[in-house]
Length: 413
Image 1 (cartoon, helix red, strand yellow):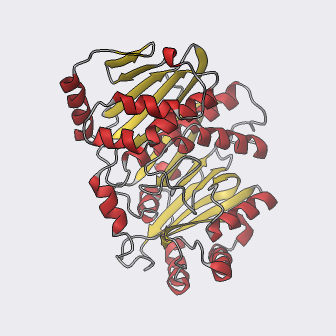
Image 2 (tube, one colour; image 1 turned 180 degrees about the horizontal axis):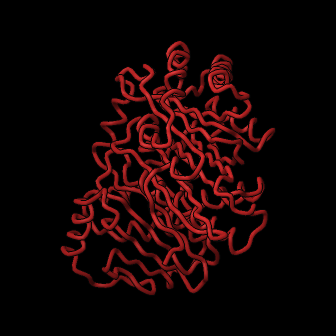
């Protein structure tokens, strides 16, 4: 049983945070497109970003800011334009965005972190952004998380948010998060933006370590289409407003906080995979018996990222041979005689040998999971064991449907 409970409020559930989301005219649709998350005080900041060598200006901006200063007061996010592959002017636009918000908030631009999402190669319409920032700041409130969550989406079908609460030093400690992501999603971050707020007091280095480990067990374990984005950004703030004692080293309290941080990140990661472009179901792959956790995670994300596995699931075809083939090409050595594969409650392979199973019932299991794709309990579960090692890992993805091609064929048209 977990040491936390789910609460409402998203990124404004922790103490000392406000948020807002407005329509500033950045999207041609007129939908909300500018979001703000604001801490009452300077907060310890940590980040994990895309591994792509083609990066958005906001990614380089945040990396530089966090290298020079491990704290922040605000996160500004625009949707509609990625501001990636926009050259020197895109970099100037990013700097100007922070300066405009800093002037409105009367804080240093160095205390502001940035994120962008949208079409690659398109700059931010700076006139619209400049006109929208005063309205954005005016809209910031302690109940503004939902508005911010709506303002960061692009092709998402649903908004994604979560908040959890635990007790440390007999005081409530909360972590909240919002994220976006639906396509261009692949391990080592994706076209995803995720913002996490926390009211615990944590040392700079420990907070970054916690976030990096949480990302490895969540966002870096999801895939929709095998494409890594230019804009992936995961930012976490910890402002100490819970008034608990500072956590400066690993121990019981640090482990409790990191477990809750990981749970928040995993919830958001699964929500992104569940909302994959054109997806009809969430797919979870659990791997056991590997030499170590990293090896198990590698096998799991290779299976969940296989186009053949994803296509079979969309066709409600319990073709376990594709699962076995994906496990075998993951780059992790194991004995074929140790391979065990299970789909839901259906044992398909054991000790490297195929087993008879009810194909019709297994197909019905896949259809039932697809019928409730947005329900937590309706997930296609693939369990794989590769030996007797202690390593375990999980990865999440979705099926590959006709609609994925349609959505992305028409993305800029």
